[in-house]
Length: 246
Ligand SMILES: NC(=O)c1ccc[n+]([C@@H]2O[C@H](COP(=O)([O-])OP(=O)(O)OC[C@H]3O[C@@H](n4cnc5c(N)ncnc54)[C@H](O)[C@@H]3O)[C@@H](O)[C@H]2O)c1
Image (cartoon, rainbow, N blue to C red; front, top):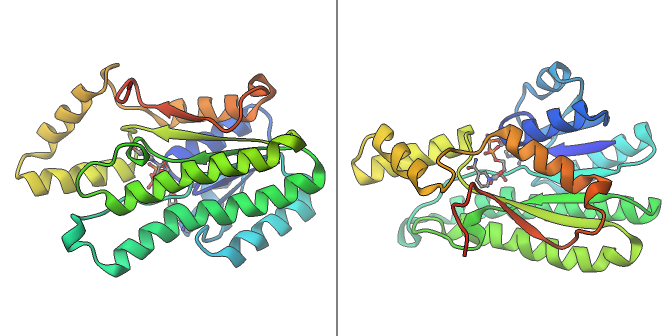
């Protein structure tokens, strides 16, 4: 059984589809009210569940475990974009970004680790961002939350390695999802340039010359979660078309 948080749209949906195609039973959790019908479209089960709420996460894992017996793969993917220059960032937006991007990963990893330690196996994939290693202006909260995801991954990987449970992190770059299009719209508005010009600027920063896709993400999740990656743990892998090489 696999759980993908934030799996109703974007990258999470790509991961859920890819895992389902490889034969895994998949549960998707999301705050999108359409989660059950979206999950059904890809042969998965959908649950309305807020990953930034510890009780929601624990209930989700308990229900899934009762139904499936084991939880073998967990993808802590739920997240949000947004931000502002530090001098303009409200307490409310700062707290929300940290809750949705960082608390959610901690709660999901904790529930996954408890389950996997009890069953003696499993693989966890967390989702950071290239901004977790190099945050641009206007991304202090987002970058801090994503740097925190890398730290959780490293610490948990060390805790779980003696039990053979692996924990790895994916750092996406510019990926073609709603989260990224919204960020581009904000950047275009702030610079006074058109959306098209801003998009083209960002595309040309990517060495491979294109934005990443949910399918690219699904492939890397499937690899990291599989036995093909059985000697890989504690790593943060950029999925960014060469955007960040140094
Ligand atoms: N798209 C990019 O360019 C990019 C780059 C770097 C990192 N990421 C990260 O990848 C992950 C997925 O992003 P995406 O681009 O697919 O975004 P998206 O907005 O397309 O999809 C995010 C999904 O998460 C869900 N979600 C949001 N808050 C939630 C919560 N509290 N509980 C449960 N579900 C919640 C949304 O409803 C949505 O279905 C995020 O963690 C994001 O920070 C994305």
